[in-house]
Length: 370
Length: 249
Image (tube, rainbow over all chains, first blue to last red; front, side, top):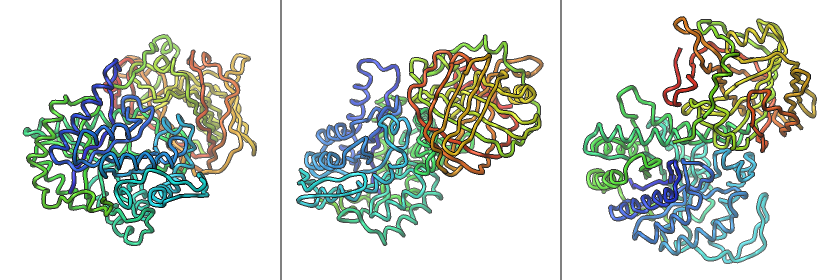
């Protein structure tokens, strides 16, 4: 089991001159501490226009700052939006390779397609097309990394023969992941030999079925990259405190705030009728998990409470096949920074050692090491 | 935390229908035709169109819906609504300040039973193979004209309709209270299409949405569905903060 951080970078109103600056500085301080404490990875989303919920539109910059301020923690692009109105695949390959070089081979490369009309509409993207362009990009970007010169005639993208430079520091290239929010996307990940970067929680039973199917399917995959990245990464909330009741209460407040903000956005499916978005993406699943517990009880899958409870929760996730858990630490600064840092320290001291035997260097599992 | 509405609805409640929340009626509306368009609106009115109990969506939106019910307990009718996209706490809703109906009998029943704040008008829905068009003419003026162009079949499962929050008065404990009445019909789809939205005329003031300015077309859909009008379950107190505003019946 490996542990990481996951950043949406949510910024509370009122937005004063230094509000965003302070939130970013808090996030960077958390990442520096996490690196010292032995966390394996830090992921940051790419979102646009998502007021309060996520002010993380240039994750490559944030993650580069993380890399420059840390020594070991891996940096996860979670995710590159593989939609031409948002990004260009050549540029995405180049930026990722550069991040990998300057971080000394610490990049994890996540891919996805956006799930909100707020973003898709903002960029003028066609919701019907996003799955197709994602599919096309995930196949060509690793070739841009590994071929001396690359040319391509495709459906949504074409280019004449060129050397796409620089090349990643990790050879053959960084591990590749797919953001999984819609049902069935974990199978898309498996079929392509990519890691499953789960962005919804679900209960243990539901996840166990999905993970088992992912493991079955990936055995027969046709990998888009040069190697298979069989790994299941999930997202969770973390608030660890000696007092279980206080920890759970604070953690539930964090989760509730995060989900409340998410629900203010306009999901693609809510605005535009399309088969391409069969559900609402991460939004309702996050809310369900954060609230679906009998009165007075803590939702079963959330890593909140005292260390003993969190150890048990993580053991349960481990038992259903999860390899890595990335934690959301805050939402619109609901939890004071000092408490976030204390929570990380306590988790590292009391929880992480319980999983030390199962912890391997992250790059090793993906066979994408330098 | 998210923005909230700033609108004072007191004046509108004076003319709002009085709802009997005790009724257990469930109307069946078989074979109803539903034309719906969504537009983003200028954010200058983002909070001014909704009361403090609601959050605006990001981005702010209007939802235009015209429903023709060929059969109902009150006879056939055509109902036109322009709703403001909103969130009641974390729940997606459409706030309806005024709608129009072509049938006096249906208008009265929909108001008394489900709180639809309606005026009578000439409402039409015209389905052709290359377009579906609806118009609303009130007081001699066209207050809404909208079109779905080039319909193409989709699955009804791809459609999602907002539950209404209708501006109405509700009798509880012997007094009439100003409330938003949640109406979330059940839909069983027979067919569905989507196409290009086109808004040809919209008089915002005629819909009690003065200042609302549609600026960006989002989507258009047309469906034929069997609708079940629900038993009322929730009210919203418009002046309370979102997390305190919902009342269960």
